[in-house]
Image (cartoon, rainbow, N blue to C red; front, side, top):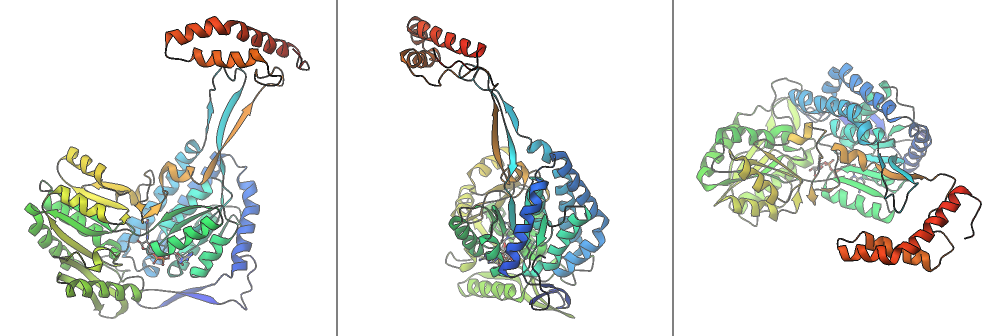
Length: 536
Ligand code: NAD
């Protein structure tokens, strides 16, 4: 890290949330370190931006290979540092990373290639035009605690593929995973300094946002994201924000209820309910309400909590003890307000000191309960039985957060209709969280869930600016250059009338415009023969 003086620098310890074991430590970056990293990335980026898209794509392919080559270590680290069960680390951290990098390698060049554009031959007879995507410069990426590897790596990869330098500030709870992101690209041979990792808490994030970055790509809470956006507004910088979610699952009467229950249980309890996009609310229509509550309770109590390194562990610890305190607070508030807590809540797991929380299912939650509005940072799901699908849609649309939602129905057309009415960024029918492992699809929400998109072609394109270039031959002249006269003004009017949908206008253009257009054509023709001639 540039400007680092390890002797006087404080360090950040990385620990395993399941056991409390210290896994390593990283130096905390001062604001000066962050700014030096940005400056160095900018310096190297100038050369990186000159590379052909196909060459940048090759780095993405090599990075994918590096992830595959180091897969055992990556999975071991993610499951230790985040507490994510090993099966999930393999399937939902490792695989999406490889998929993202290979997709960028295969599709990035085409998506970013720009195009030649045909201009109107009447107005621009000799001009050739094209536009291409130019990188923004340096992108600051800020990572969240609950998805410390695949998500920031994807943001970094998108920014690099678009030709930018990157400074990544991982979550303080994902510092080693952040280092691993850098290592993947180092193994891919990325020029030194193009990607830097700086560590720290909110102040390091603020230093990054306030530094000379051209865009911030942030993943985290609404509260922190709002602060990032305010600072970006002050500095007139672009921001892509992926913030909190309160995803709902809508279960229709015609759903395959047993399958819906399995899918919703996975969507709610995987990653201990901490993913951006975890199911937090279930809206089940009356006909299937009881079956959904009972089924989810059965699913919840069957889940195995334990050491995330074990292959058969299904629920690991929450990333921090604060999160468990918050879950407890929200459950207590809901129960005090009259809700029924069927199962789950904070628990101790023998031999492990982590903040474990057994999957919790609540029903009959009164409207005033905080859990209906606030994000519960754990495996907690609230089931509400509603009269019909319209009531379910209205309940989803009441939320200030609009990340994703799933609709469980056998009727594809009904599902599509409901999807259109839901005010969220992503709707999955008969599945939940499809987009997380599909880098082809734009990822992101509306309202308090975010601004902009993290994946898909749109993510690449918002990491770049379209730049227009045109070419005119060094002979001849456009007809609208000086000098002005009546013939020029009348020819403009004639051209406009020639484009009219009415016959009468076009006839009039020919009647009144032939002479002025002819004079202008002669003028242009003379200039073509003699580039130096400027007089009529
Ligand atoms: P957080 O907001 O506490 O921290 C996120 C990151 O922002 C961290 O790196 C943190 O150090 C940094 N940060 C905090 N305050 C900052 C500030 N003022 N300026 C700059 N940086 C700042 O969130 P978290 O606990 O790490 O993650 C959980 C949150 O992230 C949840 O709300 C979850 O829904 C959300 N999340 C969203 C998505 C998504 O795709 N929408 C994905 C994962 C997590």
